[in-house]
Length: 273
Image (tube, rainbow, N blue to C red; front, top):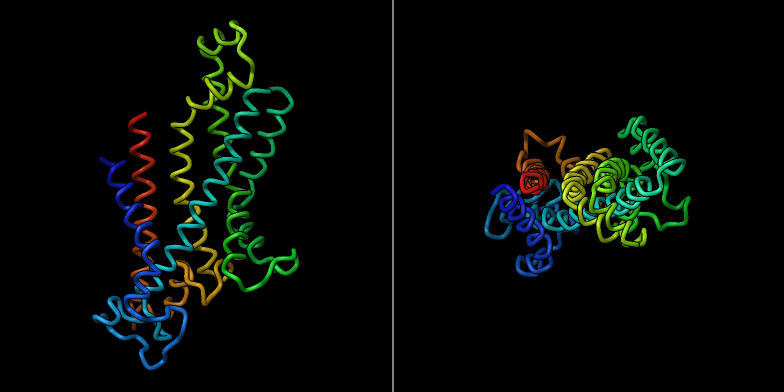
């Protein structure tokens, strides 16, 4: 039940994000162009959720923001999962010095204060590393890389613990005794049996990445306007939370639904395991 509900919530958000160009064509508004004559317009047939402080349609910006926020969340989580699973499997399989070095690196990253470090890295000017400044694709890539570099640690420790448990089982020993190569043991016997906990970690990583992107964008260090994301929509609405509460309520609700959907998926997968 929880898994189905979580998938339904995430599926609805993904469908809404994919439908953003169609909704823009249907409503006939440009969500990036200000229209100061329509500032804070109430919900209507022309603007179903009203407009923001610059007269831009809130529904269209929410849908386009979903494309950005969900892309960052999924891409960062998948990158962190791939890095973490590979590192955890390698550490469990090789053991010894490789295991010790990888786990000490993981311990060091875990000991660092995550949010201040993310803020410092996000504040680096993209032009200094050869990336174009002020483009949404650059901002998305920058945040995905930053989140992946720090998000792999938890997945690596989880994958390592699960892989060590599997490697100690009788059927793995039997496979080795029958002459199975190490690559076959890892890919055929170990990896499929750790996918359950890794999937749970991935679902939670998506929620964490969406929250991290929203935090950075809220602080002005993530996705830069005029490109919308749920985080910078909240930042734009923070000074008008009492005079125009809907401008803050809708992106806040979208973040809540996305995180709740990921949590439900993680709980559902864990319950099935």
